[in-house]
Amino acid sequence: MDTSDSAPRLTRRSVLESGVAAAAVLGFAGRVQAATPPAATPPALSPEAATPRLPVTLQVNGQARPLDLDPRTTLLDALRERIGLTGSKKGCDHGQCGACTVLVNGRRINACLTLAVMHEGDEIRTIEGLAEGDQLHPLQAAFVKHDGFQCGYCTPGQICSAAGMLNEAKAGWPSTVTKDLTEQVALTDAEIRERMSGNICRCSAYPNIVAAIRDAGGAATRL
Ligand code: FES
Ligand code: FES
Image 1 (cartoon, rainbow, N blue to C red):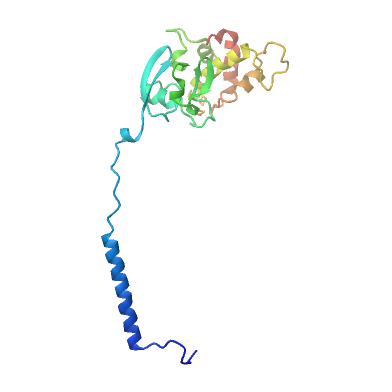
Image 2 (cartoon, rainbow, N blue to C red):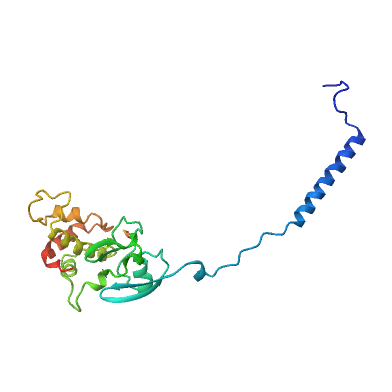
């Protein structure tokens, strides 16, 4: 311990003096804090005001559907939650299962991966729009005939995807299993499986799904 004269010495007087000084500083800080006005609280926005809306008219199954949408609304949510067409299913909402597949201008698309406002003027077709009155689409009839489903949750997406896929094959689009790029695409089971690989069936009804699509074949290419 340093006991030299240069070391600070604690005395009763020095302790009292430092306590008074500290109290004075704290009192001043408190007065400064009290004098600072509280930050203004921003006025609460109603949900409508907080979220901008966009007017958009979708053409769904041949009908004009005017909507007022949050621009972040996916096509799938617009179809299901706003229009009430619940045939298109939400399986993953991440583009991984194909349950939400619909046809846009004749081409298959995952409705969960696209925004509704991007499709003004497009011709959108869902599973509800495939049949003509009481006459089932050939793919729908083939799925019934071949028992191409169990729980049925994936089925609307499977059928819409198959309709788009058959058009792609008919147009000569090759897949990774197409052997001869100079010939018309032969609708083999391998071609069907590869081209339908984006549509998952949790019930594993795949053999019957492939049989139904093979059976419907060229007759279903009218979209
Ligand atoms: S819900 Fe769209 S791909 Fe699964
Ligand atoms: S029939 Fe159940 S998920 Fe395909």
